[in-house]
Image 1: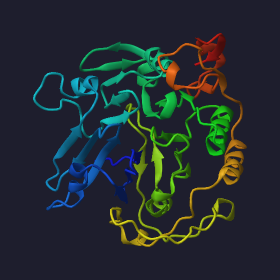
Image 2: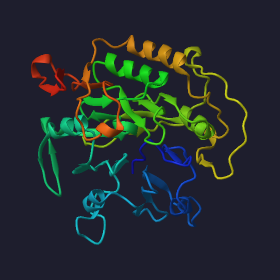
Image 3: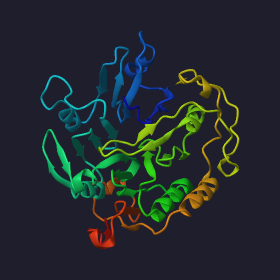
Length: 364
């Protein structure tokens, strides 16, 4: 059973990080934290989404191999999607992914279906333009499923990132922090998103993000209370591969190898010494990773240098356009921020369809 890479953060310093070799958590709701201390212990966490007002969804594989889920205070439309008037969840919990955003927004999908509500207008338009048909049981996507979103992240103030199975996508990053601006430049310069597994955004931390590449490398700006656990996980992330199903990139586990120092150009600043927080727990089942200390998330100058290094291997650029002046999020967002859409991998300009965005034309 696949264990996807997860970076989820909520208010009051709550977070959950997950990979095939590590999981880490802090200040999660009591019902969720109880999963990590129950006996017999659970085997895996498949999905963990944290939202506003105590909302959460967590799915896990128990000691007996069965998959279960727990949730609280989810948007009504999401609860309807999960149950569809049945006494139990009808979605495939082994591939179900959920992202919770502000104002009861969400995007949820498994290997055969998808549902969303109250998304930023540009994101919803990008998704609807990729749908061929949809009912309660199945969502059919254009281009034989290659246009299906495989990763969606919802951040603060209408920020979002979406990538499709084929490597196309759309994004809108609204923070003016140096790290986010550098990441936005990287997305603008990328010919497609085939090399990106996901860009994790967090509604409680507008300036924070984790950019995960298919190679397993990450570039991030995270709050200090997450550094200890993030530093243990980052070097152990495996390479990822995209399947033909509309699910997140799948980690490709390799036989254990000796841990070596990263190349000089990948070195970050050395971490400072700080005390372990009492409520923080990090599990490292693989002993070879125990005690690894990864440098802290890089600052903007280091991010820009690494982004330039990666961007130098890419040709072409993304077409981007200004945010429309009138949106459902108008009272909560600044106007005139940069947004973008990326064509699918291998699409020629002749096959790209124009999309009207606030008076400017942007290729899909």
